Image 1: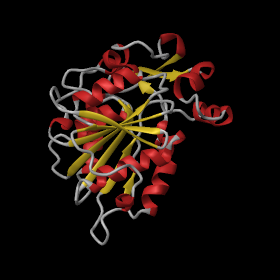
Image 2: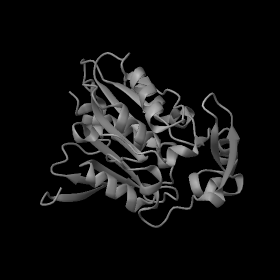
Image 3: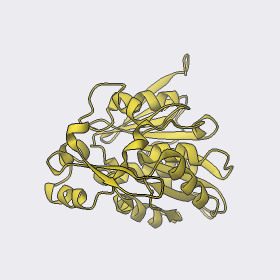
Length: 273
């Protein structure tokens, strides 16, 4: 990325950081889609401490624009196994795919898209965009600012055929501040109660070869994120050569800022034409 001009364009409350030339502004007239051409399928992947319902408002916006959308459950059992599961779903989708990941879902899309020629765009929403060998823990703590650590987690062992492991849940007292500080407490209390835990071994499991090396990527940086520091998001976005939007949002930008999230996905989808 050295030597390439970067610029920031402000669109409403968002800042669009363009690498090279940004061909369309978020939410502009061209964002309506492909006209009569078939649109790519958008696959939305959630992260830990969440479920696919976090994409609901984004799904509504995309489907109104005529995009086929899938939001599968992420098993949250491990990088390799979660990625293999998502890859098996992607293999059933014909035609071009725009693959979107939030938080740990970014790790999963980075690995699952590798080798699938139908994946034409990757979109990271306040997400991990690892390089080969990176771990979630290392990326989360590389820059100061995360408010999620052992003290904010409940650990609950679970049995399995291979001897069992431990799941991590965000404690209720910490959930809103860490995860979704720009949402009402009544909403975050419900999100806490229904959160899906992640296997703690996922934190130290290295990622594989990143699909973003061969697939164009976009990144939504959440400036008020208390789980993945904004500095870490900017680092990962720049490293991946992603076209980047910054928005005033907590970690769950797709819930608090669904329009900007959907607009960025639409921009990525238009680029597949």
